[in-house]
Image: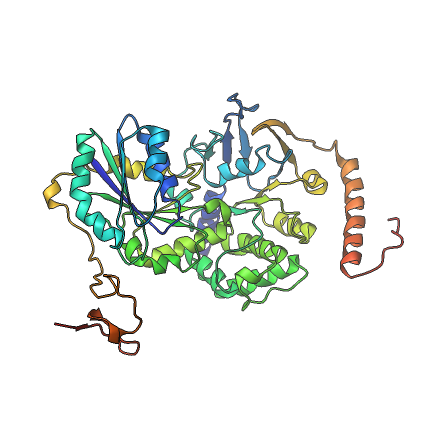
Length: 270
Length: 235
């Protein structure tokens, strides 16, 4: 009996694991994009790179709303090879995607606690500790602690972003997370990525950050509103990655010293 | 002919939604447009210049625009039909938010902006609750969590309300609005079209331009600060 119900749980869980397929749209001159299809599965890490205005945010927006040739890019996004059911798009409690936008300001005039409470309601969760869990996870990503009585509108850019990432992990808890320029707003990005990687989720980073880019398994290169290339470096960037890791931790150390008000006369060689 | 009645607070993005509707349906289904506003409006000219469809505007001046809307609706339907329109779009001014301009035999669309504050759906509950469909604009400016919180607030006003989230300038997500318009039946019997809700009545001397403060200086339906009841003062 127990064995049977266990099997049932596993099957239920598997049915949530999905494959998302992006089909090509058009670039700004009306030409077809340079790929046949992009498939995204749980556990994938993908970065989307390219100059500002090249269509990076539009790419993840298409995924967020399951574009059906009805966005400026004319892309189509499928789930498990099919048109997704309408509830995936319209019912927040069924939506398999969470997106952290570039917005570092929250306009909802509510306290952190009542904001999370309303989001929990919309996601139809019943765990009574979700609010505490979300705030304490958010506080691991940001230097200044977030209090649950604080108003959302009074949070700093970094605090808002940290709370939104924690919210995506704990409250939304979706198989796919889209992150738009996580490196901005001064949060601990390594901690965020480390934490995200422990939850078998598909992660898509829109980024200008070399480390975030190299930490991803695949890189989608954007140009003129369209995908111009998809790179799967495999092990070929291994050396560069370890060098960038070293440089990045040196920069982080320096950043923290400056934040603490130190006078920087020399930088230790790592 | 189909009748669409669009309401929502000023600057919520009503006209942006109208533009998307016209781009999608005109000229296969010919659109006509009526704007009812209080002091100034420019949309009739803008939409005519852009789409060359029959447009019209009326100013309600000192009278509530939704009251005027009710009074002219029948004429408006006849005007649009004389112009061979397949869809008449009536856009209200959307001022006090206590009114709800939707009639029977029409598709009532409430437009509200995602950045207008978490309590705004509750403040405009009359306008939302009697609509068929709520279009939330400017969702590109808020985070996903905020969007979902806003949606939850709308659900507090109308559990079964159909909600469409959009960046109305680009038209993203409007596929569900378009589907609702496609499925909307035509006006069947104009003589049977009535207002869905009860409009508020404000019949007092303030309505006709007396400016003194204090209820003592007025006649008609008035109230005091402490007693919640309205009463009639005068003959």
